[in-house]
Image 1: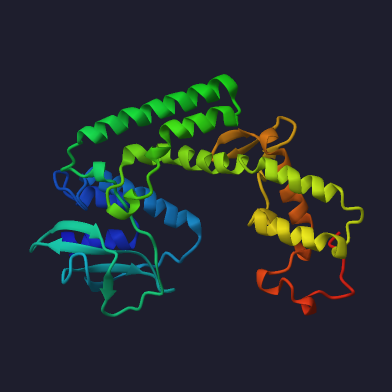
Image 2: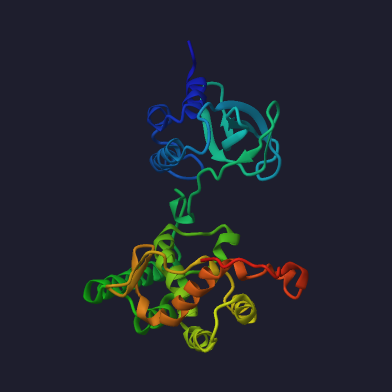
Length: 310
């Protein structure tokens, strides 16, 4: 008959978070968070793995040891027949149970080579059972709530977000999207949701500032009398360099009739990107005529008998 520790390992192999909910101790933290939150995150992660069709689900536990963060402590990496590990974990144990279980990013297996390591599970600083908010944390929680309230009120009243709103909103709350926290190990859950609209609208705040330059290039394009390679290539090269990656498209989910495009469920005024969007359409249409950066000026890469892309 399998003992409790063996059943826990088997539940991980089978991506069975419901069984782990039964087996793990209610009053014991795992990876510095409550058992309830630990299991909840495993349920989300296991469901993501099962529905992704990215990797075979024939995972097996392979013993190994941490090489850095908890150096010398042992555990298991859960690896399938393709060499994909969904997570490597340290298992601190007593005779009959596990005292702690936590994700390990510097794990070395003894019997199995890992071809690819998936992300595993992650928790925020304010998820930890020992977390005590500072005055700074309390103030940030209030500012996050205020930022959401202003954004949701604008969405409710106007529906479509214009630069007049989100430029001021970013000026007021943009510091809440602090990427330095990702390197300090002190990321907070209360900030995680507001970071999504902040990062999105920060990007479009920068892009909308280039609308006047896009208009300049668009007027130049409209003055070119013939749309053939000799006439367009200089413009294409300069424009592609100025608007890097724009040839791959912009605002694919645009509703032209209503005048908006969507990004992360935010409706953004498309009319304010009229020229920028047109430049994207032109660059994409003549995509095949834009030389690679290492071939610009190399006349051998431009054939005389070129083909039109339409």
